[in-house]
Length: 208
Image (cartoon, rainbow, N blue to C red; front, side, top):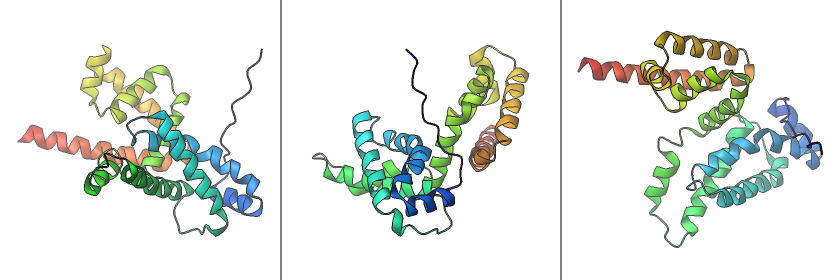
């Protein structure tokens, strides 16, 4: 039996999709397809990786967004940022409702610590990880170890049993492929700036 094709996120820009959804709320499904995976992952990482809780909160996020689409106004940020703002508020409510609710400052630490980053950055990066299917296995492995696991080239080479030059070539080819995709350009800049900052910290430690 042939499998049903998985719906692909639309490639239209946010403004176009929002206008369609305002004209006919049934068109909101396009925004949902574009953002649901990234929003789900954003929530999943912040609820102890509980799929059930993440699914419930993600559903609530999109219900609120759907109800408010007619009032949505462009303020210069992406719709993904708007959705992560809703997500953040619902996550705060989630922690407040728990019987063993943590103090608010601890909740803020969960949502604003190193894992969270800025909401718009977090969403861009989720999109970036979703794009790695365009890379070869060697490129994908090098990118994941370097940008997600924050390993230096020397450490990646040691882990994979390859030369540092081979790892550098894989990273260079991956960067070139990903940089050619306009929708990933902002995410790539965020990751690259983080990589530069990490290299600077490493150099300072070596000099001390």
